[in-house]
Image (tube, rainbow, N blue to C red; front, side, top):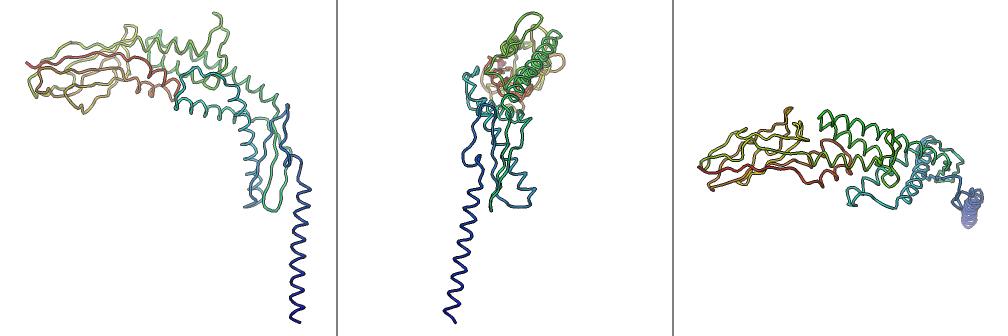
Length: 329
């Protein structure tokens, strides 16, 4: 009897294994062609999403779709990057990462118009299959680029108007916005037709930005102060005027550096009249010290834009500066 029981159990186990093997073979035979060999087409981009069958049906089907669209986005991102053969900017780590993040964001935008094609599942996984028309992708890409060029042109005109009105910070913000608008296309042509002919929007905004910064000037109201050893000089012992195109420039960040030691406060911005008060400091025991002030280009870049390309352009400039001499007497 015991032997018969063992034989029956063994038979059941073998039957179960054989049944599972048969089921696996049938599943493999039913696997669609797009899972056996990834589709390649001149007409479509394809995305395939694979996700474990955990949670409810709606949950894992949504996850499958999400992964399929991410796969589509990756292909488009690779396609965009493959078309980029030349960086106009000096390539450093920060700017490179920024450009790549813009490529990723751009590729996600182009996913409009995707289509569901098919789905399949086995005992453990769910597979989703989507596609996107390449002709629609390129048409949308061209449309988005044209919109970006138009926005950049608008910002450039607004920047020129602000500069002519001597609102220099607003002008810098608008030049930065003009470059930011076309940041996803800096390795393509960025020219546009205007009433005055063809202009390259990247070049004209870059040149205008650099020109404005180069026109910033600082000037102390006196070249020399006299103080006794260890004497504390109060704020506004000297006044710095900030100019741009020989007009007062408001909201320009400056930074002081004192040869005689540490400054409690060293960063300031020019007021509405373009003036900056000198910080409080103490005269050393040396016969002479200097209080240098310069335009804080790093702070200026962060003030006007989040765009790393524009920040790099600004920080590469030579900052305007001026020096006050403090003599012991």
